[in-house]
Image 1 (cartoon, rainbow, N blue to C red):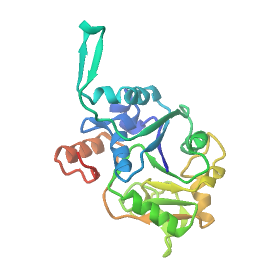
Image 2 (cartoon, rainbow, N blue to C red):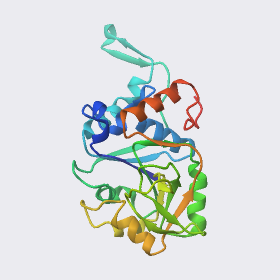
Image 3 (cartoon, rainbow, N blue to C red):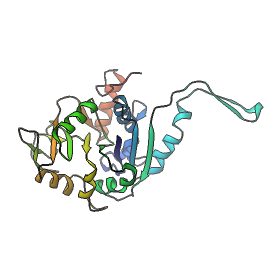
Length: 259
């Protein structure tokens, strides 16, 4: 099963960093937050990624082009026709497809643009700026058990996010992207979709969190995996610093992998 990661936005709330690179490439503990997200999925056996890039998409491509080189011990022997010897193997078991989905394309449009790389099969989707210790395998089991077209991970952070109305059978009866309501359940990403979800996306101007998810909720085809574990987005410099401190402490809750 392929994992799509939305990584094309401008990151306007964290311009201290995003003027140099896309937000998913802002580092936490010396590695891009994108890497942390991918390590989480990989821990649960999902190793095929489609990165929906846009703003400064070349930075993401260059990172993965040099990934193996930068994470290995290497000897360059210029006396032997520039011979290069790699002494250790730290490669990930990943297959990564990076797609330039456009500079100004909306979130739904970015998903639509990578449809040909997904094929006619269910897929995972998340945002490139949030980390969690959610168990992806349990999320997928939950999705399959409910037999709906879409499942999203719902958490309760309180504050500035839009809210979801969730029924006793986990069906979402209302999806509101942004409101002034405090508290409640919100969409934390870490989503699962059936392949016909692409039919809900009209084109580049479609915002994932509006027409597609709102329509699914109206049809009773959107369910919530209610999760009370760790989740944190990185919208601001303060949130980046918070994640850095957690990582440096050795107690980062989202680090579910070994090594």
